[in-house]
Length: 448
Image (cartoon, rainbow, N blue to C red; front, side, top):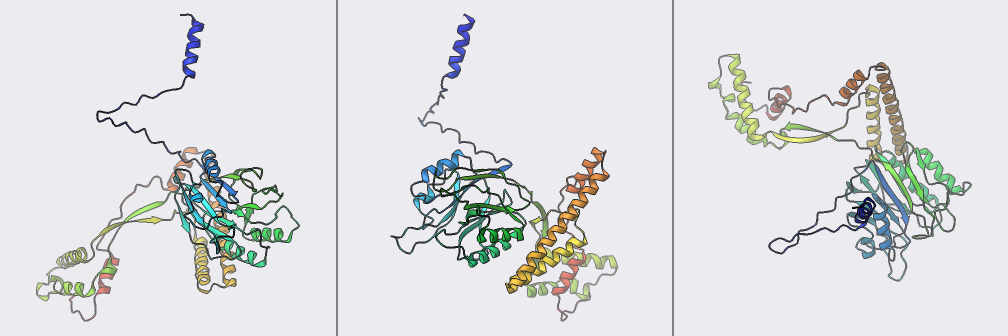
């Protein structure tokens, strides 16, 4: 065959559609196609924010945007829905997505509902709704955590028909201060309806002062996010968090607001799980245990051993049998915090002080105690950062020029060289003996 003709035939064959032959079984049932593989999570999570201005006639477009844009979390404000069972709202979620929402109930069916916020979340993420610190009156909000991201997400909507009041800033400060105490990433976004592009505006200055006081940053550039030329939709995170690929689409495409997209790096902290063997001493019936102990050979004066070894063996065997009978050993899994090699006495002292002030604030709920708690938390995390930086700088300096020793040291610090062992359950330790003695009343006459 002519070589040019052969090449043309190969190109033509490659351009033709591929057809799959499905073989039918003997009972005439067609084999089901393989399930579509779910997109594996990457090291970045893609977020989207849109003031929908009603999802009633946009649910198809919103669902298409979420699927085509490969969003992991898509946040909606002004959905105009009054109940979580709203059909238009549920149709906004593509297959493989779930919804967390906060509707704005409508008092009358004739009036238009301009509120409602919703989060559309990909099912490959582990998330759970969180209870807000309090129920604000000047804005709507909903809060949830994403375990895969180790972050807390907050959607906020302040009605644009209401003027910016001091009540809003008081509630916003209280809301943000409670979130600033979380030991995870924080993403606060939504329609604030504050003209942050007007840098001389008093509301804008007050908002920036609040963000500076809790070490947070607003990432949306001073560009139009509304068709009337205002920057109303904001994205706020802690100052040390990274926000990548921030994109603000022109307003007026899906609604009168811009579609805002960004990515947040995943900070995976694998949990440390320790398996332990425990006994449920608190559930032991003391009367039954006392009766069993009195009837045992340990409290029988006629069966007193002759040697110390026999005494010890009787003591051990009796307590062993009673413990197995009344409080059998069971295995539990306990999550432990990751150990920090730079943790010293100063860090522990700061942590105790933070917990003390936090308990006081939760008890009194006073403004002064809240401010003291927030100030102590900032000071504690600052000490943590200094200790961590100094520790790792010293380790790297000591191992300069010795890569093998450096990696061996790092593996030891990270615990990679330790084999996972189950803790042994020893019945002859002092804690067991003290536990058994606490169950005994002085009225029991035993030789021990």
